[in-house]
Length: 260
Ligand code: NAD
Image 1 (spheres, rainbow, N blue to C red):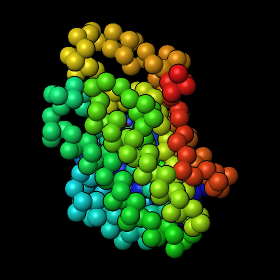
Image 2: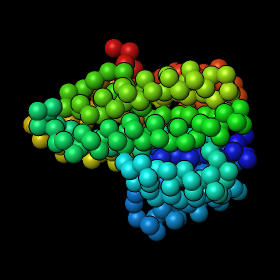
Image 3: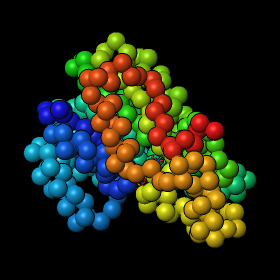
Image 4: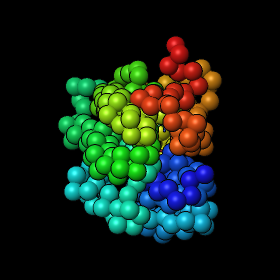
């Protein structure tokens, strides 16, 4: 149902972002993928996306902590496809440390990537969407856009900010056929989660098993990680015409975490 549409997904060489790209390509969309990683592996993914979609897949490997690089990525998408119909702001990183020991460069990185990059991509994509009177802006926010956890100050701040930004965009775009929504997963099993286990072990003095069961899944009543496919299915739904009345919403997919 997305033939002729173009989707740009930030941070889509891995994890949730890659799952979005696969789901959107499977519906026939052109996709622009972005993120870091092994060049050969990324090229293999790009080709697989084209094979799945019968449309085009473009890789734009810019660093989204830098505004000139975000502008370059959006310009590449505009040159290749005449604009972006579906924008998914998904790139994000985590750092786990108490506030008083939180490295200043990590704070700046997380705010730049997890929050400010979404402002830049949105301001650059929105005029084209408004002109076409159709668009979808989807943020991978987090349960941490609604509630906090200790030792994640920058991440929680960025995700709460992203949720507020999304509501504002939804209001400004409401009469243009453009929706803006957050998807807020609980713990999804991806490299981002796997990589924070060692720091959490250090910060809390716990074993790997204790971190998995007593920290990560402690707040998730289903006691199961969310899957990347479940998150991608929510994004696909938000792209459907049936979802045109859903805007400014924050869609939880967190195994009951924020119901507590
Ligand atoms: P991931 O580490 O698998 O993927 C992150 C992606 O961002 C990768 O493609 C990486 O290359 C890219 N990236 C990192 N730095 C970048 C930069 N400077 N410029 C451009 N791209 C960059 O992580 P994930 O778990 O798939 O996370 C994706 C999003 O989902 C993040 O915003 C994260 O906060 C959010 N999220 C994840 C979970 C979870 O439990 N995994 C839960 C809630 C929200």
